[in-house]
Length: 363
Ligand SMILES: O=C(O)C(=O)C[C@]1(C(=O)O)C=C[C@@H](O)C=C1
Image 1 (spheres, rainbow, N blue to C red):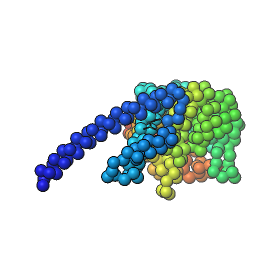
Image 2 (spheres, protein in one colour; image 1 turned 60 degrees about the vertical axis):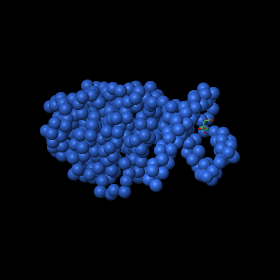
Image 3 (cartoon, rainbow, N blue to C red; image 1 turned 30 degrees about the vertical axis):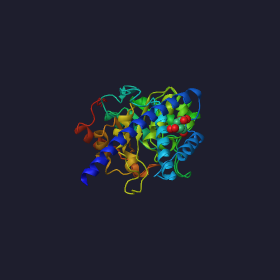
Image 4 (cartoon, protein in one colour; image 1 turned 90 degrees about the vertical axis):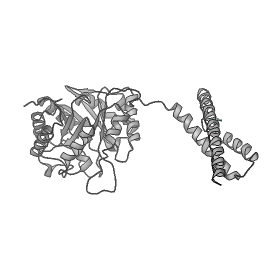
């Protein structure tokens, strides 16, 4: 009995190998067909051809599988062939490491973002007054942070919330940043404002809500300024990289990516920091990667361990919000840290050796 089973299984093994050989032969044919189709500009998916083949196959079906089963099996083969054709023609994205194995380093003034050091970008959620920005700028400078952030155009969830100072806010940021030798990162929401950005700031931020604003991405791609692109709150890592590809394929390769938390059912944090996105983005792409420790958490008490996790996971830097008096802030009052908290935070991560001195302490 067992001898009989062994004999049948041995035959089955042989058939498997023959089938495999035939499947591989078929796959090579599908690849060649795919190449011909590409040259002729024909669609890869051809339902009529698939229907013809299924008809011919089922007509010759000797059994014992019924026609439905045979149809199902062959449809799987057609699908796999189609996937193979597509895979062959999918060109590596410009943002991909396959295209460029070495890290992109984005030079912003004296800061080499994505270089050997880690970069901190900090500043108020919204630009409110010149004095507010000045107080933060002074603290940043003292802590050796060279990039100040501040929102002048604020895409708010509610139309009744503070919408930002607009152009006046950008000019305010510029004046204060120049006073302290800082570079400015600020969000632009309208493609028509890119020119204004080039006149007033150093890095264009594209916020989470605009990650798939393709006209804005294209306009940023045509700009000479570096772009700080935040991941949309419901965007997959792949969609995030495609958004970056819009900018890079437009001719602007100075793009920085920022993971800022995604929407989940969790309520104890404002968003859920997708920490795995950090090594994934570093692996898949050559662009610098940041983590926004403020928006991903929405709370002050866990920003330090979250920053440590981000840097340990390979992030090139962190972004955080700092306000001289968060309680009266016009936006995000609950999550911004005040200046003493910011100083304590900086001291902590510096003491742990997490901030290599890319940015010298300048007091
Ligand atoms: O014959 C083609 O045009 C192919 O591309 C090959 C093939 C197949 O696997 O047989 C693959 C996909 C098409 O939808 C139809 C058929």
